[in-house]
Image (cartoon, rainbow, N blue to C red; front, side, top):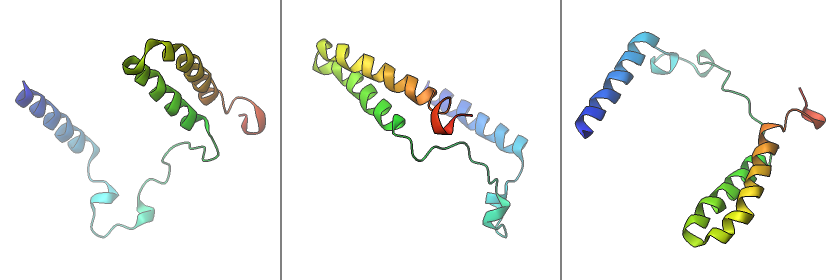
Length: 95
């Protein structure tokens, strides 16, 4: 089963590499500016990812610690998730 999954993964990587073709990162004579400059949208001032990760970790840890902790962690994680999703929908950085 493990060998089958390794073959499956190798096939996917090879097929993707053949479809994509050579990328600037693979060329020896490439410069940094030859690569894609757009990486994605990033909000460096946001605290929501930190709180979401902390409360989600607390919620999952509550499975081992005690179920009573889930009643505290889950609502806080839900608030952090909503804040993370809608942080650019209102306030100074609204789109």
